[in-house]
Image 1 (cartoon, chains in turn orange, green, brown):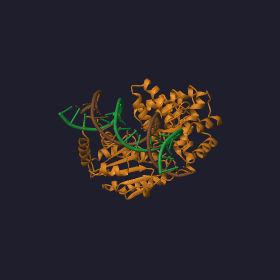
Image 2 (tube, chains in turn yellow, brown, purple; image 1 turned 90 degrees about the vertical axis):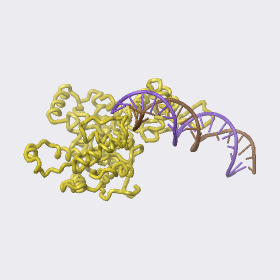
Image 3 (cartoon, chains in turn orange, cyan, red; image 1 turned 120 degrees about the vertical axis):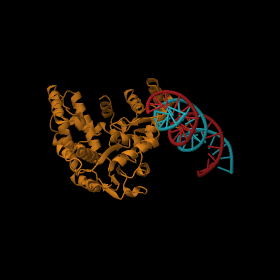
Image 4 (cartoon, protein in one colour; image 1 turned 60 degrees about the vertical axis):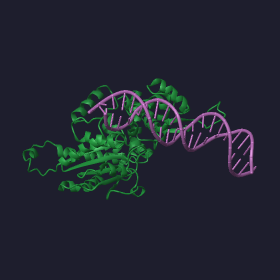
Length: 383
DNA sequence: GATCCACGGGAATACACGGATG
DNA sequence: CATCCGTGTATTCCCGTGGATC
């Protein structure tokens, strides 16, 4: 979103007396172009890819740190800054084309939550590098590999960042080695939570550790809150959210988002203490990031939406919840049941004991409860 | 005709619990 | 008393098929 757009949005929202002027600024799944309070880490990343500026292929890099510590924020910022730098239609560079000292590099940022197989990773990569449409099916994985081969051969280097490695259901570092091994002029930055010593070899020689936020989180909330709301975020509120979230930027922003929605729903023009209370109460701390949920397939999201809308979470057994949901969708109850179990295994849902009256024998059934904020999910789903 | 993978469904395994067995 | 067994469910695991696309 550019500046004029931001101003226009703010003007119209203000005239309608709305509290939230820019949802993206409050959305924990969206990152700012300029990360707040991470200058030294940004330098470390630039150092890691420094050979690029000498027209060499840099070594691969592993970026790691706890959840909500700003890994995605900093890596997306890096890639988009580099991309802007290289693709900028700067008249000076264009005029001196040929003698340009600008390296011929292409950049791509991939989310392992979406790129869950070799085929999809290749597809996402090509999609990020090329303007042409990339087929979704009907073409072999190796054909996509050949296409990548061509692209890497045509430019000096391709730098790929792959975010969210090693989460339940996503590819890991070892997969990345296997997937990218065929390509010579390709360097990658893997991003994950696991500390290097917890992972098997091989391990990239370059590593950047992103520690959890401490005092910086208040600044982040202030910047993003003030940008997303029609007024400055109160320092006391920012501090309270940061303390509650224990340094996890995702949880803090999620709570702020819900707080703002709560205020707006009440017709309040300011964020009140009670809204912050509601926000923190509505976000399970340590739950799955909302980005994980929003990256699920449409049918999986539909199942979750039905589960929530029909209050089938919690006390209802998986069996009967699946029956109700299946009736509302195109899916059979067997498939819905399997999806619910799979989502529970991936941590998106949490299984819990369900009080069952008549059952005297057999294994106890369980119900499922979202391990993310329902209100945040609902808000982001009908955007 | 080839490709990928979401779906559907069924086999295998885990768990709960009462009763039999050593 | 501890362990095993049988029965009934719940849960996990696995794989063939078909739709959509190239």
